[in-house]
Image (tube, rainbow over all chains, first blue to last red):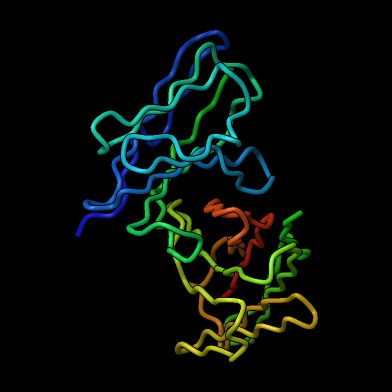
Length: 115
Length: 116
């Protein structure tokens, strides 16, 4: 069974440009999460989808970030326009069930560098 | 508020030594889960273990063991007879039942280097 996949693995863009990150969860997982780790700090929650609905977006830093999950399969996270402080590693995770007990399985992350 | 602290930023040991990674947490809830993840150089976060707040039994899996103590709010991870392949960043994380929240709260991570 394929794990969580993310594309691209690395993106380098200039300040003010737009970048779109993609995440494909494990097949059959209704729950999809986005997290971010900025340099040297802890991994922080951004948002949570249940199928195509946003369940919790309390961690989204501002309205320059837009996440979608059309059809309840893969998800995209768009940053527009990108700022220097958006640099970091963006992780996607998925889980099968609902609730705090379920294990989240993570992808390899997308390293975003904003120059 | 929930918080996870991994006070050890970096640890370096020689192969075959035992090493313990500390994790201390704060939570407002009596019902919660604790996790450990490993991030090898390839970058992905690999799930290692999940432990619920009602189960304080220690867990052993091969060379890995976990010590959960609610009295000290700690969930420490020990690697016995460490190997070079154990070199990675290790993250401790917490999820609470409070208000149905599902997000994981992570510690800062401990970078473990095992030297041959």
